[in-house]
Image 1 (tube, rainbow, N blue to C red):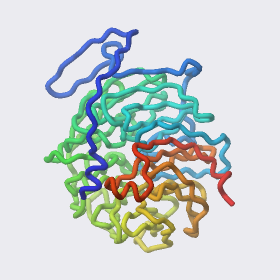
Image 2: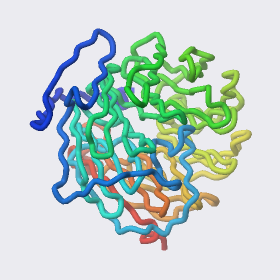
Image 3: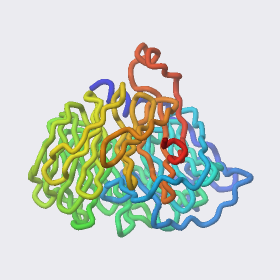
Image 4: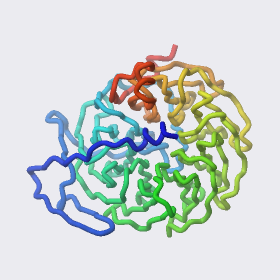
Length: 432
């Protein structure tokens, strides 16, 4: 799996943070976890657009505030395709791998250039940008107060205010690729690059508990929490195991060997968790026992997380170049979509009647949710690993990133170096 490991853990030199001249720098050292309040420590450089006016960012009911939209990662927003805003783009000049968060009239996304960006949703005006000391591939999560939580390859988890100021940062180690999940009580769940899962206090960033997988392989999978069983967290590790973890204590409840690595996250509905693996299988697991309920072979490695809407599970597979719609109760195939020339890496996102999935053919594919027929494809700068964040208006937001093949293949596929563009797309302009 050289291709994937290179993609997820590509090295960049650690950058020195720019100094904020308006704040006194103070340093604290700790042998375990470092937590800093905004008044005590400046972490990065916050650049605010001189024309941008920052206001409150209260979340709306139809927002997409975190990876998978909800903590169960169902990735379903039952809205139409009207799209109330103009389309816009932003060129970060480096990979955008994570999925944007959309909430309170803003769009948040990170880039391999080390920045977390905040834009005005309606027109793409850059409100602020915050620089960390590493790649930012962790998908951000928004809280009700408009603050944003995410990880960086500098080994820290950050919580920034709606204005982009540091509220806290916590060191958890390794390259933090894992999406941040905000639980119903506000606490933050996030995996480290060193085999640990953390539950952090929303107010302080101090760990409530730490789960140790017993090895140093990364936990890149987003921690999923279902509504019916909120005391069970499901996460997978590159050690090939899927874990059920007690939300209150961090104790392991069960584990199941998936016989394949990868960063696929679970989608939890009721007491079933749907999760893929590099062994090409999607599994339905009873989260109360850890027992397998059903399994389906997609004939391709699964790097994405499945999504769910109204009794149907949607999952993308790589080598088979296929998106599947499966019966959630028994895994029976309802339809298959394979109108691409390259792997599907993106996780499916669902609106009322469209499933959006990104592909390495440099396109976002829009698929009819009920028939599996193509609705349209939207061409981008490069591979689309980012999932589409669907807003309450039906607008979709996602990024593209450099092709992940070797240099010779990159030339053949038309790669142009470290590309990374954020797209705001109005589906109504592309539906025939």
